[in-house]
Each structure stands twice: as structure tokens, then as C-alpha cells.
Length: 339
Image 1 (tube, rainbow, N blue to C red):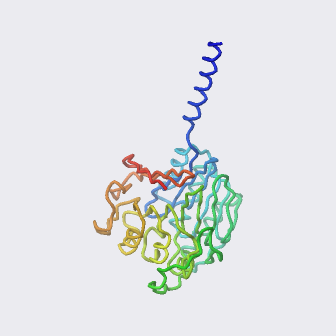
Image 2: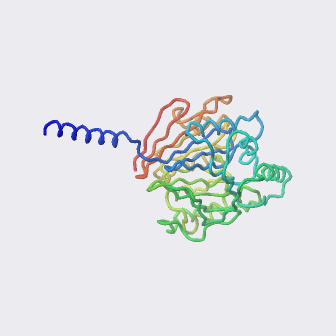
Image 3: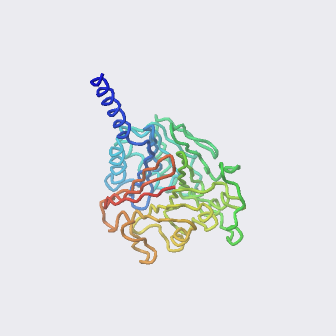
């Protein structure tokens, strides 16, 4: 009898150990340094993947190589969805080289190019040629992507936006009264696909390069987005975007600037984000060389401090209870933010 009890207890102990040792399900996000463009790789708890934008073309495949390296770090053999926010070169230009480096399932975008400029027409034509033979989906505000384990909600696309507030949003925005009207923008920036990604209680917002007039439509007079845990600062932190009435109403707990050494992170936009009520930390992919020391965060929250760098990434791991951890790929230092 004692031998049986010892055996049963041993089995129970092993089971409890196996349960304790099993990693907790998480949402993983990799903010890849593409030198002032965008490439954000998201891996759901189910293992499905979404890449938002592909960085620049050229540079001997620099950006596509960094994306593929991040995908391999995440254990991926293919990227299930590639979402192109808009057709500016720093967002769509890397598509052909990416397809040379890794298998891609479906491309997602806002439909045809809507900017009257030769360079953007050229880049859009290169994109269409590269994705020939791949599945392609044109999204509209309010649509979602079928990624198991997380909710990916389109909040803006092709110059339009959601008409109804997201759950928990819709309140009158007190910051709108002091906000000056913004000029209309007829570039592809204003047509960016913006998404809200939710995993349990964790919420992440990426609006691509939306500019102020379109951001304010989401924020005023009623805020349609609600609050967020993590905010990818719009348009690399340029002051063409990021009006106070929107940023402050989001009440982000943490914000990330996907700036380059000499692109984005303008002092005015940096200050608005930095001063946002309730913000715990601001992280930067690069030290902003054309700004000043007062408009750069402390070095431990900057991923790449030199202009000619190795392009280290920033990793975020989020849990369903809203807790998330940010890791600096240059130093290995990490910080956890509890709900």
C-alpha cells in the first residue's frame, strides 16, 4: 500500500511540476528596427503571425533580413498575414525582398493607392507585381482578421474610420476643446490602415502613419478607441500626427517610438506622448540624433543608440491579464508592467 501511495504521489508531483513548468500563453510582439520605417511582427498565443509593414527596399536586403531573423527567433517558418498600412516606401518597399526570404500567406491592405505622386504609384506597382499569386484581402473599418487567440480590429482604412465606438469607449473627450483644427491630408498617410489588437485585457494600438485630421476623427468629440496598454506612436513620432486630444485620451501605459536616428521623434510630438496622463514609460528604437537630450528618453529605454547600428529589436510579451514585459534587444534589460 505504501509503495502504491509513493507511486501515486510521485505521479501527482510530476504532473504538478509539468503544469508549473508549462510556459504561460502569451502574445509576442517584435518591433523591428527598419531605420525610420515600420515592421512589427505579432505572434498570437496560437502561433499564428501578423507582420505590419515591411520596411524599406534596397540596402542589400537589410530590412527583410531583420524581419526574417525576428520570425526565426519567434520560431516561425512562415508569416501568415502581412498587413500593409499604406504605400509609402518605408512601409511597403520591403515586400519583394521579404518574399525572397520567407513564405507569406495573405496580404492585407486598404485597396488601390490613393496618392497622386509618381513615387507612390511606382511603389504601389512594385507591390502589386510582387504579391501576384498570393491571397490578398482589402479591409474596411470594423473588419477583423481571423487570427486565433487575439482580436485584430481595423479602426481606420482608406481615409475612413469606425463609426461606432469600440467596447468600453465612446465617452466625450474633454481634451478636444483645446485642440486646434488640423489640415486635410491627401497623401497615403491619411489612408493608413489602423488596428487595435486585443488579447484578454491587453490592448495595443497601431495607426500606421495617420495624420492629425484623421486621428482627431477617432478622438473627437467622442473618443471611439478607449484606452490602451501599449501605443505605437503614430507616424514614427512626427508632429504631423499625434494630436494631444487623441494621445491623451488613449491614456497609454507604455508607448513605443519606431523612429530612426534621423527620422521621427520630433520634440513637439515626443513631449505630447511623454506628458500623457498615466504614461509609465516611453521607449525608442533609436536615439533621435536631430533632437536634443531633453527629448530623448534615458539610454536604458533606447534600443539603438548609434546611427550606424546593428538594428536591435524591441520585444514585448503580453499576458491575457494585461501584464506585459518589454525587453531591450541591445542590452537584454527588461521591465514588466502589471495591470
